[in-house]
Amino acid sequence: MGVSGETCLIVPVPAAEAAVGGHRGRLDPSAADGAPAHITVLSPFLHVDSVGPAERARLRELFAAADPVQFLLTHVERFPGVLFLAPEPREPFVSLTREVWRRWPECPPYEGVYDEVIPHLTVAVGSGEFAEVERELALLLPIAVTAEEVWLIVRGQDGRWARELTFPLGA
View (cartoon, rainbow, N blue to C red):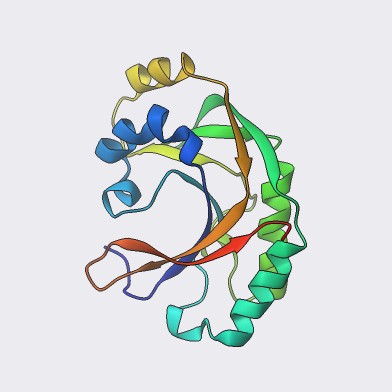
């Protein structure tokens, strides 16, 4: 379980829930903890106690300057221990991450563990064999999506994620 008050910035992807929801519920701990199907913009972000009016205004301005993103979830890919859906194009998500990180350099993506930002919608995490899940998902792709907002989600004392703020893209 993560730290109470931890925050993340995500693009919710409700259009994918029908395809991935059952798998995520069983195979992705973040889903079990209440996070919807999403593409992460920045994780972790600031502790919720540090997201005051000034930070909210900066986030609102940043995301208002970005256009909504039309994309397709086109194929299934893997990282070590992770099965995910890949968005195309991916560059708008990379740009959002870089811009948030540029404005909050103390918040590198994934705490700076990875050299490259690879936008993805996680479906399964762990050392299990996901070949059947991969085959099932491949039959449901592509999924067309328009991302219109970014959420700031917060981990509560119970360990569950909840939406704290919504920032429209291009508004």
